[in-house]
Amino acid sequence: MFLRDTLVRPRAAVPKRWAAQARWLSFRATISKRKLSRKRAWLCGASWLTSGIAAALNNLGDVARQRGDYALARSRYEESVTLAREARDAWRVASSLHQLADVARLLGDVESARQQFEECLELWRDLRDPQGLTAALTSLGELASFDGDAAAARDFLDQALELARGLGNTWGTAWVLNTQAAVMRRQGEHAQAHARLVESLALRQELGDRQGLVEGLGASAVLAAASQQTQRAAQLLGAAESVAEDVGVSLAPVYRAEYEAAVGVARRALGEEAFAASFHLGRAMSVERAVSYAMQTEYSPRAKEVLNARVISSSHHPGETLNMSFATLSRRERQVAARIARGFTNRQIASALVISERTAETYVTRILRKLGIDSRVQLAVWAAHSGFQSE
Image (cartoon, rainbow, N blue to C red; front, top):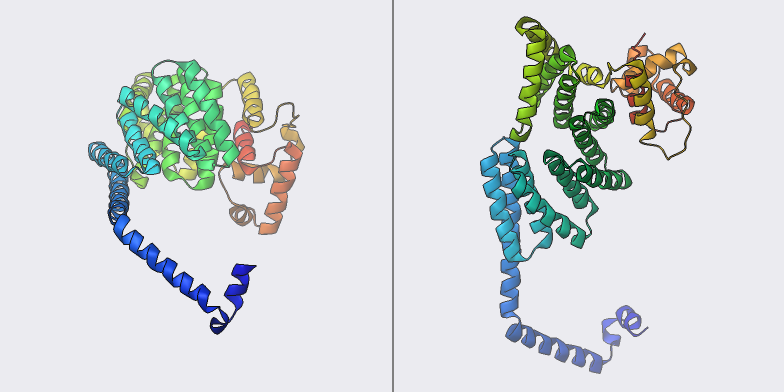
């Protein structure tokens, strides 16, 4: 009441003794600050400046990393971490250290990456940052897989996926799914790996994440080679290379061995001439066509049936009953579903089928209801694995 009354009174109405007391207290406070806080103010300013330089170095590391200059990126991140520690900026330490660990991972320096990611995990927990936790858990899962510890890898990645889905982090979810696919492939679980890749590709296509699509196409090619689908592998290798050139990214050293092994498997199985023909066929694909092709499956009918159930149920609550019968869709609905599988928007569907955008939206809603699913991503996954094409 006192403060409110004082603020709303005209200046002349404020009692003189209050004004005098206020001036005296202000004077005392100013003198105290000048005497006692000069050093503290200087230190705060220096700390702020140091933290700013650390942030700038982190950004320079990002630029170097995007260009594929991992040695320079590592150097910049190391400088950033050192300065962030000096400034006692916990968030900047965690962020730059995470980038430093990720470069070590991409270079194949597993031990350094693990130590740094473990420190990051603790820092992100102290900061209560779920996005940072998701990233650290995903990276630790991949490192565990490199070491052959499948149980630890699955545990880390299951935690990361739960966090990413709970946060609605589409990019993070796609990354975790792609990493899970690699773990499953190394364990010989090819159908399950393909299911994860399909969902990851659908999410990345929805985001327009072309760099992520390069990773997904490359992972699909390696999986196809591991599954002895060598012609498919050759085409996907060509598609991945073409999209990578278009986006301007290069393959990280840690993945190069598996990629080159896939090339060798496909080339030996097909012969040089057939491999070259399939590879160039893949290079000629558009991004949309390449993703659609990667999302298709060539497993046995029984494996496809199991795969469909796994893909869709992975995004549903346990115990839900899904109606996955292709026969429930009309001819026009199948045409719409096939185009969603290729990443078309409602506007693109409307243009392709010569219908209004509102009608296209109605078809999408009706298909979701018939199939008992609740997102375009799940529909795209289902459509891809159902194996039908636009009529």
